Image (tube, rainbow, N blue to C red; front, side, top):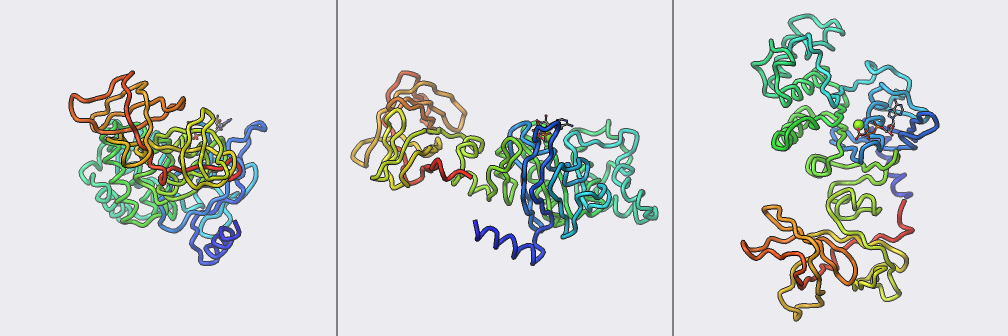
Length: 364
Ligand SMILES: Nc1ncnc2c1ncn2[C@@H]1O[C@H](COP(=O)(O)OP(=O)(O)OP(=O)(O)O)[C@@H](O)[C@H]1O
Ligand SMILES: [Mg+2]
């Protein structure tokens, strides 16, 4: 904890945090939408706010942009307190979930809107619009209206409009939620490239864990208005601090139980997992890829499991297993025609050294 405070202090002094939230809260009729969120976003970082519907992602983003007044706490941008400043003073650009392009304006007029408000001369505006359209690879669409664009094109224009002001901070609220699955994947890559090329500090809201894992430098997992964990995609997936984070990121089976004096974990149904964990009440997090079919028992301890459900995903089959009274999910690629069915018995081995066991009192 002390190390974390020291890191924050030294980063603050070095001016690394472009956005800094201190004990930020928003209450609606005494109900917290966001509760006591503290966070520093580093220069040039792509940080993702991830969490289930209603956990406070949009409210946090809108407090940073200045569209929602915090009940308490502060928002600093580039070292200045912006808590009570209007949006246009904050040096932020925002892309809303619905894109919010002005329907009666052409693409060029949409992108130039903020620049016109700043009284930029026409020539300078046109140069910047051209530059932005080139950046999002839509240079031929200047005179179209939003209704004449596809969802993906509107998304890119909204991004171009937000970036035209060269903001210090780019705020994106679920910008891909209206796109089909294939376009989403392509847009993720494009967005990463665009924000990297202009090196803008970016906060990105999503409730899609795959989007968060593939795009972010760091992920902030939110739950019911508070921050549950902050870390790199690897930290969050491999070392979740709470059962909530484990469950929210990636598929996993959570087993409640206790670690005994010998360091082994025993689940409440009696499944024993040998290891060297810290003693006490705990939750074991087992990912599907940590369970493998065991060809023979000579190579180490294995378990007999009964298949409860089998779901074919093309590249792999996901099995729900009953293992000593506990239900666990595993994933494996089976040869064509050899897929297990419900009722089959399989031999499996659990990669104990990869399993994460979260102690009850370790939770923040
Ligand atoms: N203007 C408002 N008045 C009252 N309650 C609100 C208001 N805006 C948001 N809330 C409540 O605050 C909580 C957080 O809302 P928020 O929009 O930040 O969630 P979110 O994480 O963005 O969810 P989603 O993924 O569904 O967009 C919700 O319970 C919501 O109902
Ligand atoms: Mg939202």
